[in-house]
Amino acid sequence: GQNIDQPTEMTATEGAIVQINCTYQTSGFNGLFWYQQHAGEAPTFLSYNVLDGLEEKGRFSSFLSRSKGYSYLLLKELQMKDSASYLCATLDSNYQLIWGAGTKLIIKP
Amino acid sequence: NAGVTQTPKFRVLKTGQSMTLLCAQDMNHEYMYWYRQDPGMGLRLIHYSVGEGTTAKGEVPDGYNVSRLKKQNFLLGLESAAPSQTSVYFCASSSKGDGANVLTFGAGSRLTVL
Image (tube, rainbow over all chains, first blue to last red; front, side, top):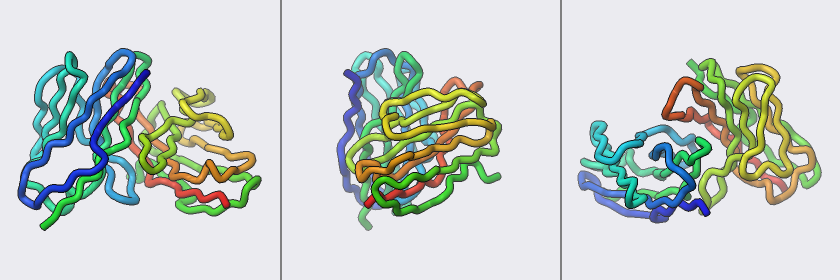
């Protein structure tokens, strides 16, 4: 079957670094996405990885290892506004998105 | 630039009532989607459309119908609402030419069925 696993909740301190992991098992693979969703709002696109390695975009970086079925989202210099849920999703062989349940990130001062 | 607009934002229904959720996008996107989001679960695809006049079933289509008569609009209908359809519904769109298939979401519609 198809499955995406990510931690339900994480807590981190303002100014610190946090890594949110995502493991996946899907039928075929055409890329992995990270979206950010603030409470009561729509998900917004953060990153897309289709090749192995690290993609850096400002304070946020996303890593992919296709052989391990593993990705992580790295957030640096955490700010209070980074408190949100982070959704991992993969694009399967039929180009359908498979979504994880999301990781709720709580930032403490 | 409005992006993706959903109406209504909130609605309370009684079991057996019907309603339609409206989604409009002004980005000239070919693809449109309806998802539901429930606590502790990933987004689940209800129905989607790859172009005007076309629709297809997603992962959880039962109890819902859709129509895409115009490219910019995608309607989600509930013919006889059930408490299990209490959820937050998100409409999204994406461009056919975007290999990464990045979705732009609407703000969501919170539906409660009593």
